[in-house]
Length: 114
Image 1 (cartoon, helix red, strand yellow):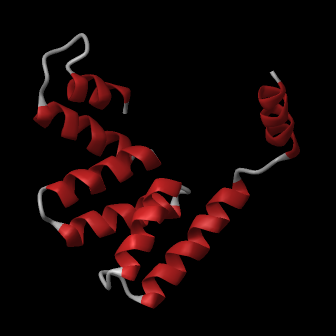
Image 2 (cartoon, rainbow, N blue to C red; image 1 turned 90 degrees about the vertical axis):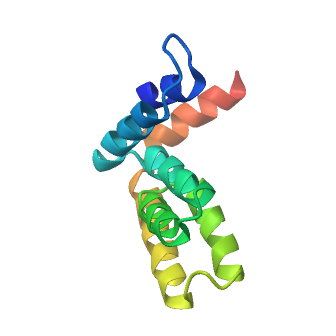
């Protein structure tokens, strides 16, 4: 995922959209939710809404809040069925719940107190 960011920004390497997308795809295949979200954004920018929505659904099901927000807008705009949105919302909540633990909450509280 980090390599895709470097190729996107041209930081330390020459800007290269093909390499950026390649590394996003590799990270997304590996389960990286933000990479999947970014692929959805690229597809939307290129006018491929069906593919964009599919990427966003997968990312939201992995717990990506930004994708869920984008899908809310898509649902309001009629681009996503009520059933698909409801299923995605349930899967998103399950993914978020799966990452909760007393240790994580303690670490987050310690970080906030600093």
